[in-house]
Image (cartoon, rainbow, N blue to C red; front, side, top):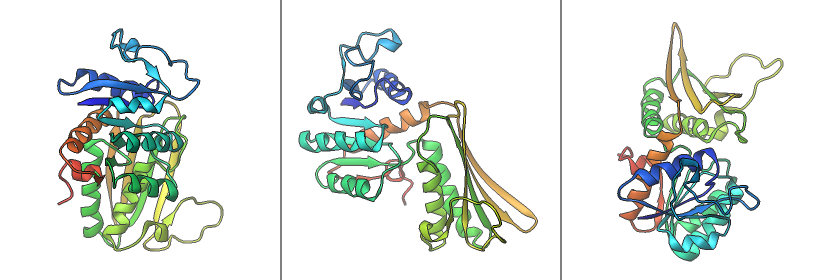
Amino acid sequence: MRVAVAGASGRMGRELIDAVLQAPDLSLAVALDRAGSPGLGQDAGAFLGQHTGVVITDDPAALADADCLIDFTRPEGTLAHLAACVEHATNVVIGTTGFDDAGKAAIAQAAQRIGVVFAPNMSVGVNTTLKLLELAARMLPDYDVEVFEAHHRKKVDAPSGTALKMGEVVAQARGKSLDDVADWARHGHTGEREPGRIGFSVVRGGDIVGDHTVFFCGTGERIEITHRSSSRANYAQGSLRAVRYLAGHAPGLFDMQQVLGLDG
């Protein structure tokens, strides 16, 4: 399968390119980056000391040469790439976070014509953690829940898409909407903790790849379910599984729970 990678000069883009080049069943066909990027015009494998023959471009029309795009960029960039994917019948794996409701609606509309895997986290471990959280939320309905996450200083959205998904899983398991029970910040005289609320705490600093912990706090005990990423390789490998999943499916909107068979 011919794979395109967006954000080719970035840290995640390079991790994806490396993973695609190592996969025997995939080939790197397109490397995209934003206009003005210093990487434009360079070979996509130059950072690895490899000559791939794929030159980094900012032209979404290049997606005509790919079977599937992997995109971990920014919402505005992803949506521009998405339109090109629809035009050229190219499937897309979206790991970008921070979409507003209009952006999410555009993704759902595109999925009527192409295959889309849209998930806040492509890691196999994170998606397994989501299943554990669902179970814990059902077993511990009266426990206080707090979601903690930490990422590198350059991450622009907060809480992370993964943290939001974790909160959504807990809320849904309890028959609630996250918007109705979330506490996004605490400051000043907040009063006692209101039962059933889900609190969020955020750290941004250094080069932290991604840490997430969900606390279930009861009387006399506390359960912590934690996932820590030490590199971006797990996101890349999960993305390749999503690419392969789309190759065997008709157009539609899928998530990593479906890709990994955890939705049953």
